[in-house]
Amino acid sequence: KWKEKVFSGIQPTGTLHLGNYFGAVSKWVKLQNEDREVFYSIVDLHSITLPYDAKKLEKNVLLMTASLIACGINPERSTLFLQSQVPEHTQLSWVLGCLTTMPRLGQLPQFKEKSATLKDVPLGLYLYPILQAADILLYKATKVPVGEDQIQNLQLAHSLARTFNRQYGETFPISEVLVQQDCSSRIRNLRDPTKKMSKSHPDKRGKIDITDTPDDIVEKVKKAVTDCTSQITYDPDNRPGVSTLLTMHSLISGLSPEEICEENKLLDTGRYKLIVAEALVEKFTPIRQEIIKLMDSPEYLSKVLQEGQKKAHLIALETWQEVASKIGT
Ligand code: ADP
Ligand code: NA
Image (cartoon, rainbow, N blue to C red; front, side, top):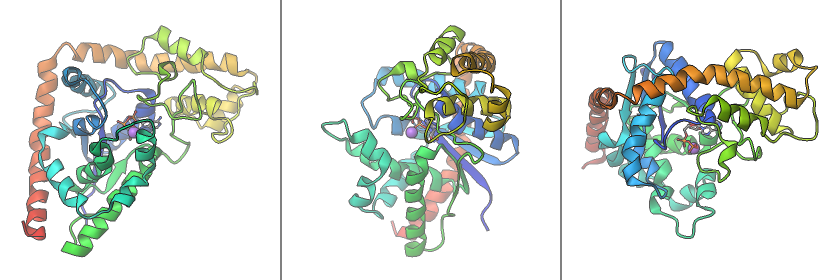
């Protein structure tokens, strides 16, 4: 019944770190290349839910656009656009907000984590997953490729779709959440492997950006915290440090983590780190160079977003009109 459509979003907080790359963007590229209809949004309205620098945001949007293109998102095949340029996202989020409750939002792990250290919690942070649901439903997406940290937020999107459909008639598909199956795609902070790699973790040395120089990459991988076992084994629950190195290596090489363990069974973690660092440098050097090149053409990057806006807006407007007529506004 539903046409297959892929939607996902990323916040324009500068460039991508390896968690974003391996957990999400590498999958986006794959889906695009499988010739599916794909929508990828730079979700700037999400990024203002926590304190940010308005002057930097504009540059960060361009940097994220360049980063996505350098990673293989082809604007001819993907609709790549800026969330705030399509006003129906916020319009639909209001309607969806009227269909859920405060306790339902308050219990979401991402909200709890992000608000834990704040004295005053912005309302926008609380509404974040509602806007995320609107992003997805506006395009009637059937597949949503994300990292595993997003699963609970997407369950909320599903329940909002069901509630809307029940109340106003069949309107939205229940999307399938695409999370990496073969190995855990949760990339851990290299200095604090019990936590995920994220822009917001205070220890920046535990995060590798795709724009890091080869020296930075080698340095960060060398200092990655593993544990007191020197053997290379894949065990994400009990050995998150070395397992994150194996996950990244596996996703680059196409070999399974077990195959990589077998291949490197004579090495200790110290020597193995050098191999991982080398693989990362080889993978990300051409991407970094492409980003530098693209950042020299800000007009081109803005044009890509404008073209994306036109394509996205056509669909968003159609869904919004359907919603507006159903809810009686
Ligand atoms: P961040 O979590 O760094 O603020 P975003 O919220 O913009 O980044 O997330 C963009 C995408 O990257 C999401 O699909 C998210 O699931 C994925 N992602 C973020 N961090 C990681 C990680 N450490 N491991 C795997 N996927 C991740
Ligand atoms: Na996130």
